[in-house]
Length: 167
Picture 1 (spheres, one colour):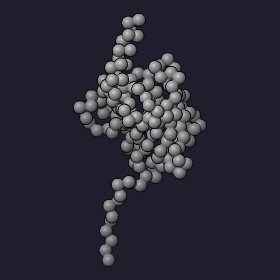
Picture 2 (picture 1 turned 120 degrees about the horizontal axis):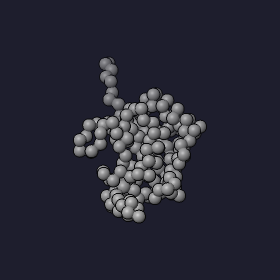
Picture 3 (picture 1 turned 90 degrees about the vertical axis):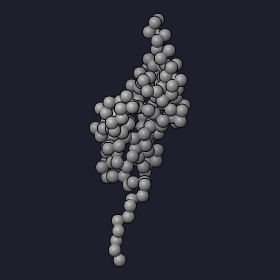
Picture 4 (picture 1 turned 135 degrees about the vertical axis):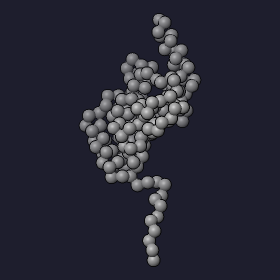
């Protein structure tokens, strides 16, 4: 009887390097939290799904806000980016109606001239949860209105920003 290699199922097994990277990052964020964020595992047995609590940054439209999000990591993390979905409704130019966050650093590093993003603005394996969370805070401070996920929120934000500038 000959043995053939079966094709792996579509749900790839996480690599040991992904497990190691996530375990280290999680421990680091517990010991030295990022201001404005709290993270915990959705399920203690699964390092690949995190719950994130985001506090609206001071001096922004989101000040005083409390937003919950889920962060899902792919089996080949850090070679592929995680995804972030807000569970709390967020009216923001870079958040889709379903809560998915649209941010350059979470886009795979493919050359896509249509996106208006430079490859260096996209995901690379040197990014980590800390840099992602700091980018999300930055996005709450300064939405990207050039390629909005929510056009209405983008128009509204630009009008508000322009009205602030003229005061």
